[in-house]
Image (tube, helix red, strand yellow):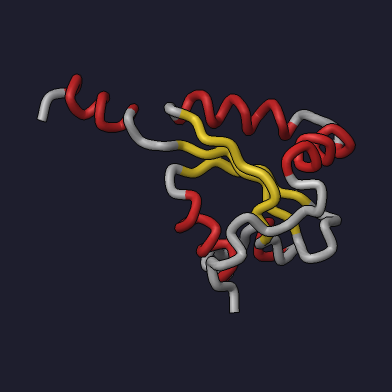
Length: 109
């Protein structure tokens, strides 16, 4: 498989920037993945050893955005991580005013 074909396959994937929080919405984590459901399953099951999300029991997906490339998703992640908490809250509340878990059916029991 040539580089051009591999590059096109990589670039056709979906990429996500996401925000997860704990049950009291007091701590947030911003991350990037190419498989949102799998990644959230990993957070909910505590499969990511020694992670921030495991330490603070972050599993509720309260915001996410889809991107065409990892470069775009990482840029969004870095931008949001640089914001003050109030701006992060406003981003979440624009689409999710009750901080509901968008992927609540991804088991965490």
